[in-house]
Image (tube, rainbow, N blue to C red; front, side, top):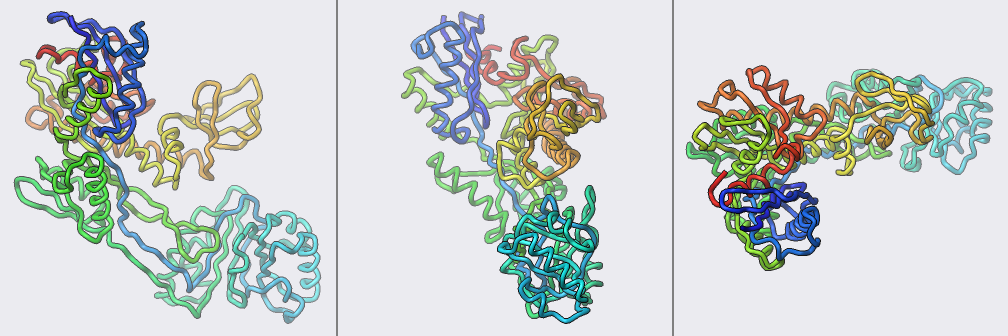
Length: 609
């Protein structure tokens, strides 16, 4: 009799299956999981392995640190996956031809459009009667003094068209003016606004967004721009799309300067030679070329380009973590997804961003025995237990998935994790076809961050995991499916009017973004479809008999991402078109879709399943 621990090192979690093995019989005692420490497949995983094993031993009703009860640890062969974003066009646009202010304060004053020459507040009384001006009011001026002075000069004949304020005084000033004016406030860099220049201020009404300053041809009409100048103003107008207020100031003495880093080409090596594709061609072109290059021996990025820098970072990072030379690091797969990437517009006065087309890439480094052997040796030395490398994840996952009640050979599984999407197909005779593909839960987070301009990975993870709602009163919310839910107790005041995540029936977490619920939902679902559905189909094409997905009858979904509230449904809908039945697995009839690989590592011990 022996106690065997199967340990699956994933990109996000490390899972353990603890079992008693006697002859051909295997009795599972406990299971556990703990967040993976370090990059998957490196010695940094040691702490996570130890903590996960401690939890499993405790769940088996033994002393938590009693490692002496375990005779053997079996590890999976872990393939690291690193995700990054390669821009289709990386352009730094320095706006000197037209200065822009489009920071979208929550409470601008007044509404409408005002066109005039920018004038300092202290210079107002010196301006000629009938002159059209836009007044620049610094933070040192009180809102009452500002409104009195503006009313005074208007009464004397000065044509004040709009106001630009440093303080959050837009509404206060607007309420005290003798006639309504568009007012943009909260402009922190008020001292950088060029004076004596033609300008246009636009403020939209509540619930609406600006139209004129977000349209390059309207801006061209206002400032009398030539076709070439209109082309140069596009980065400004694109950055202002969706704002409720904005300012554009023309400074004709300047020029527009651009510094571009080419997106570059991706080179894919296979037995049929090397094939190249430009990142600017988009994700569809990249994935189409990738599909005809299997088996892939390596993938490179063009030196000096954006994607070349990304690929080099991947190789350098993996070389440092594994102790291998860069020449020994090979990329075996990538996933490309079209996305929008917010790029800061240099020259704006309030941190404006312009949405640029981009391509998000996840790449998988080829599994090597040496790095995993180093992990095994480190675990054995630290815990004092014999450690061996069991098998590749996809093979182990299908063995674990077969413990789902109602399953039998032939069977296909999709193992949906954080870093990779793996597929296996086991025939009647027990032979297995398998594939590891880059891109899974972490890639979804990358795309969500890109689409919504998020820098916090934990926020992106929460948006991926939980449904949305809009808090419409102290006692009710409108859920993302349109239904209304009422509460017995009043909701927290900071939730009112906010888009929130429904963490549980009682817990709502507001999202710190100025975006609609529909936009967040669309970004989340787009990311999941373009990562998981695309990967599910291309993975099954690799393992299906004759490469025909229609020849697969049943697919079982396992892995952490299979627990997602909408990913399994998306994959089921996609596979239904091929006549394939799919569903979430229930490993050992008790674990749900989790623990498949760890269970498979135990079941494959001794060459049996």
